[in-house]
Amino acid sequence: MKLQLALDLVNIPEAIELVKEVEDHVDVVEIGTPVVINEGLKAVKEMKAAFPELTVLADLKIMDAAGYEVSQASAAGADIVTILGAAEDASIKGAVEEAKKQGKQILVDMIAVKDIATRAKELDELGVDYICVHTGYDLQAAGQNSFEDLATIKSVVKNAKTAVAGGIKLDTLPEVIKAQPDLVIVGGGITGEDDKQAAAAKMKELITQG
Ligand SMILES: O=C([C@H](O)CO)[C@H](O)[C@H](O)COP(=O)(O)O
Image (cartoon, rainbow, N blue to C red; front, side, top):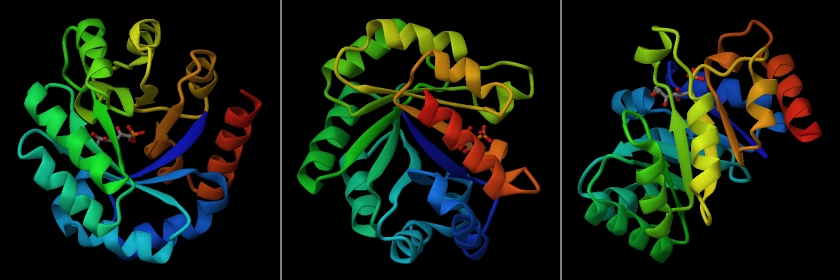
């Protein structure tokens, strides 16, 4: 099980400073969608240049023109690129094909997908690397989480790795760990803490204990 730090509400210099604090405790650094919207793929490029050893994920949440967008994120240095599970199969295939060509990986974000079990099975057959259940900010505000959806994908996915994101904090992490996803994605649960290093270290410790 790996820990991914999601950076959403920062600019590039703040993102780099934050990663300096926690780099020993995280496996993947995500350039979040709001950062990509504000700063472009330059954020991915600068993060990879600053931390060449870290796996960098570009959270583009691709919906169309997938092969092209994956190629651009790959050129910027992303190791993993995200596409939405709601995208057309043709887009998913384009993303997977381009990622394979570039030696990169595709994570599918299941945000807003209604029939998680059916779509997860289809995506698994399309050869994606990760399938991620995700409660976005707007539904987190309504008190929702993805823990049940995580159990659902764990029961149907045969080849892809599983991931979970959305409002995970230190107090809810043990419940997530029990479900044994391959990747746990945490944003505000680390970036919103006064002592970010301590929060990341504690989370990594719990994850390592499994
Ligand atoms: O993908 C995300 C969200 O849609 C904003 O882009 C976040 O990175 C993801 O939800 C993880 O962040 P937290 O919910 O703060 O843990």
